[in-house]
Image (tube, rainbow, N blue to C red):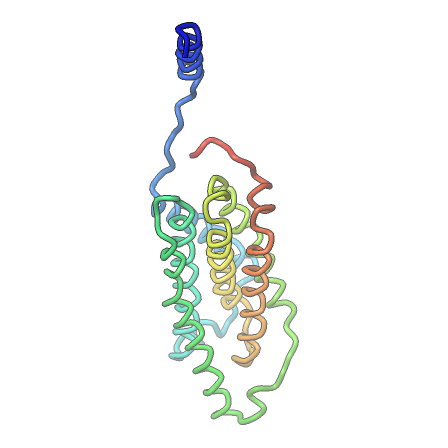
Length: 225
């Protein structure tokens, strides 16, 4: 390289360095997860207060399988939120995406136990099919603002692991929404809980996974905060 070319390269590097803007690093993933969970609690509390807690909620919580079911959904939501903020970072392993599995296993086990209990108590009538679009729709509607806030906070994660990130995020939003719906809507056979709650969660996770890049693209890259 000639001296002139070398000088031009040095000048280019100097100009780029002079024009470079400082990049603020992302806050720790656990801190951001806790911040989102705090927002989720406030949103869910507002919805539950507006709808009113159903009169039999505390009585129902006195039964073991309802306690396990609600705790399983809550644990799934919390762990999935933590997983989403960790798996979105390039210096964190993909194994973070498996973090919600213990909560999900407890949730599914409790629903299975509830189905068995319904069969023992009511026989085949305990498995009677019913339609509960209110339950299904409520989970979707509550999940929407929670998902949008989460996407905004994870907007820089799209190019890293978009599928694992969006799947964990949607699981977090829908699982916590299912907890909220249980507080103001009930009186359903456990099989219906599996079909409508599980169906809403599966739909949200599936759609989020399918359209992950488009969803992240809604917010676009911005300065980390």
